[in-house]
Length: 463
Ligand code: LRH
Image (cartoon, rainbow, N blue to C red; front, side):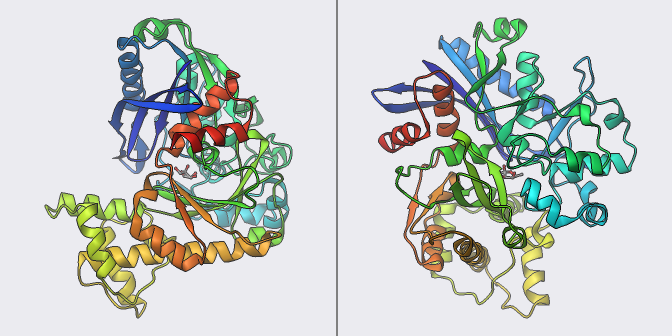
């Protein structure tokens, strides 16, 4: 069988074809397209219409290659959403989580609800970007969009809806909202009611490994793909990536860092950890594949590096990773910055934000690009070590090795600094974890793979 994975990331989107051949996964990149944030008036948006067209171009390219596609599945970053009315019309262009509309919202919300009781239900790390705070900001401003909304569709639900006409919410992406009950895997109605959010916009939850709908006839014709199932996978990119950690069944605790724009550091567990200790350590219980929970911390990841590289390019000082990383390896800088600080969330200049932070916090100020990169990477490793120490305290036994998956696993300097900071070996790869997890969960839905253990065995054989 042939599957198409559509993986939307903050910087680009990809359409990948994959099939199982002799127990191995073979993948082919069909189409890659850019994704960017667009500032319009007072808000920062994603260009959803362009993304939809680009996705369709990828589907058409697959059709033109004559691929007999059996499944299509979408995964994206977490927390963002679109609202549609009862006729399926999009109510306003979806806003990016880096928009300022949620500033100060957690403080307001937690004046109304008790943080400990709230965490004991949904077990989510409080971050301003979460859907809960985005929706609350709409409610607070009497948004006509919220008043008219019939369905809330998270980004992968949104693309799946416009492919199929079926409005539903996939479990792993819903688990990033701070509005899902981590134990029942249903909506956290208590929080929804307490904040006066409209109950009816929260739809049917579909589990990864099931079919969410069929390609609409017009799109089937336009793309030449025919009648294809659109499948629910770990439609949260982190869930798909973690599915593809090449760990064996007996590896416990199975620890990972999904390394990309964000670094998601945690372990896979059977049941959520909803304790005060977990809340204070700022860990989150997200939905995984096979009924598992990914207990992790969201850490600002290579975002800072991505912004620096983009900025240097814009200023005509473009850097290549294979040149700057060896220089950073040799550099020495006595500065650790808190990578999650608001100062690094969306500054006009990332380089200036780092220099200013060091200068105003009595840290050695980096003088060269190599020193800036070294400072960022050692700060990330230090943050990983802090998070891992908290994690170890909450687990029956400490982690024995760390899997680093995703694009960031190619950064050898960061891998080495991480291994040193954690005091455990780092196992790097697969780079394409998200695409692999997406495709193999489709194979699970279609019965080509029987469970998550077999899925991981296929990953191990494929890399
Ligand atoms: C990583 C990610 C992460 C968060 C963020 C918004 O791509 O999905 O897990 O949810 O995006």
